[in-house]
Length: 76
Image 1 (cartoon, rainbow, N blue to C red):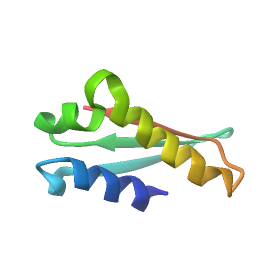
Image 2: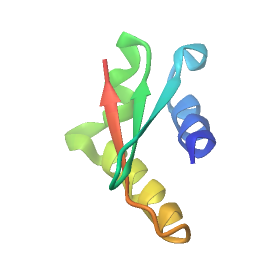
Image 3: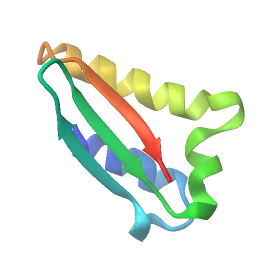
């Protein structure tokens, strides 16, 4: 899952070397914290959050096979 988020984020940004995904395991869910270069935040979020929502949808759909609850957070 971490690799999926990394590949998608690197395709969107101008500074792919600065893409980091941190995994936080919780009792109920797994949280993926996506960190990108400060100038690329808008590209990952998109207009009105459309790209961020699409990224979360893809990750959630992929997690259904594993019966896990996942969340993607974009951190600055």
